[in-house]
Image (cartoon, rainbow, N blue to C red; front, side, top):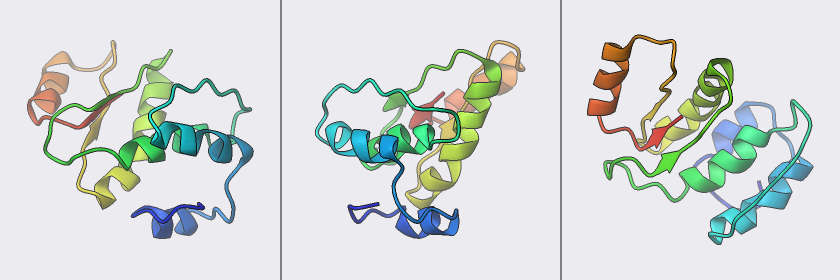
Length: 118
């Protein structure tokens, strides 16, 4: 990561030594509130490429600020799981809402006012 963020130590602990091409390409445009379309292969760090610059902008306790749409339940849960440790560093809650999960439990998660909904 080239910009100092609260996520650097966790990012390093995860084994990252340098940004992947997709991470380097989208970070600054996202920080500058520009639209981005990025394509990269599986395992290239896309979730963190898009997620970390956006998490940097989240205000803890200010309600839903990021909505991430996923094409499958599995990807929604994976995205939540990847972002969750980084969100915890800054006191932000991430929840995944999927079509096949318990509706009552998901409603309860939304009542906790997460900042990020996948």
